[in-house]
Image 1 (cartoon, rainbow, N blue to C red):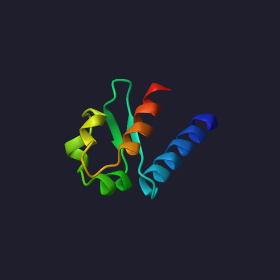
Image 2: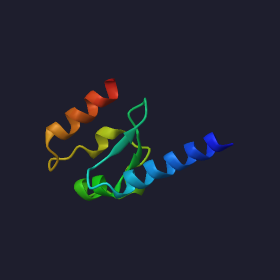
Image 3: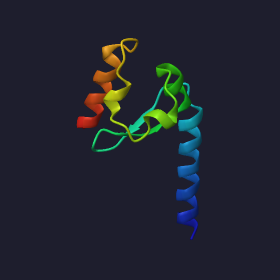
Amino acid sequence: CSSDLAQAEREQLAMKMFASSREAIAIIDAERRLVMANDALLKLTGFVADDILHQPYDLMHTESQPEAFFQIGRASCRE
């Protein structure tokens, strides 16, 4: 079906944008676990994906990260 193909193309485009974005992006589930992180987020935080995926989002909170970084994430989780 052409609508299924269009949906698959949109999803593929979204994944490419997520992966190539220079902005740090985290996808967090309802239990506040990190589901996906793009390369920009990993570079910003210094973490390796295997170490933080499926872990609580707050795990990334370190002294080197500004509190505003986490306030934005916490606010997004409540929405």
